[in-house]
Length: 423
Image (cartoon, rainbow, N blue to C red; front, top):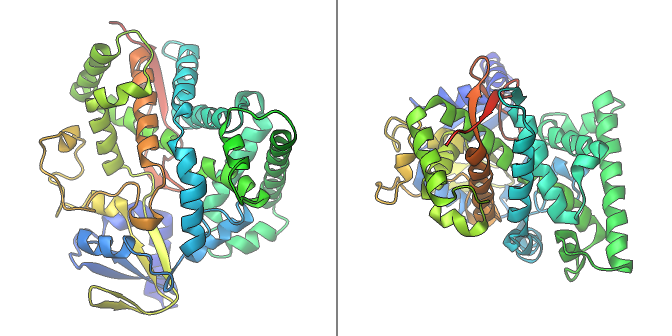
């Protein structure tokens, strides 16, 4: 590794989002990078992103370091490829994502949580919304109350944190070492696996429950390992809490957008609870969500290791290199977005001009794209609607900096005060 490559790796590791922002002056369709000893090729043009994502070319494209997730979720959809991936997508995940029962659960839990917040008291909103959304997920999955199981919430958070460091160099070695965090994470895996196994046994040998875990247990050919991994993977793929956090932060900056959003909520919902049937009528809220997905996409970059030479529109990327696409980079690319850093939900108005296809891909694309984008959008719209009916939010302290972890998080959290709305 030469000095320049080492420096680039340090710069990237210190702040991947700022590093990507610094590449916008390079207009090449594929930007070669040398991050330490690893050659990486960032695909920047939408037509090339389409070629890279909308294919099923395995090999030479592989999961690369995502394979390390098997230590937390062995055999899950995030570690598999090819026929096995597609089988899980179609037979396990799509039926789960098609079940909209979680939406009513999420609205009710959001209503209760928001009503419990003291008027004007500061909240660390990122972790508050994470626990809220995960409690709704847990109830939909198994009917239980995660708020009453703090040790299981802590175990889920350890697994979520592990998704960041497992993919780093020496991540798998770190998992096995007798380090405090590694020990806690291994214990968290065992605790969650045991809890899921108990619930599976109850559903196999007792009365069936009306929840997603029962749906999993009834899936033909599914293994116990796949049930455990699917259950735990749900909490790594459900990132609505991050999307809602950034939305409230951006709305707090823009009084005009916030006022128009509140007007829509008052007109469409009034005092009644939001339902799944309201999502289509909450058109401005949906526009706001899309604009936040553009500015702060939950998945900031996708990386694919190459096990063989790979040709991308005449550009040959050698075996052993890594192909990268970045929603963060492309969604903020001034070649495709006018005044790209400005928060403007009107970009997604029905009559607004469309950007090139795959200049916007917050849920990835192709056979390895998100399996439930419609559900995720509905969840975000309904959580925001329920919060916005009741509360206005204002930032407390300095503006948080976006930081690239498993998702894009506000560094140090998002301290906001909420006050009851007067209508």
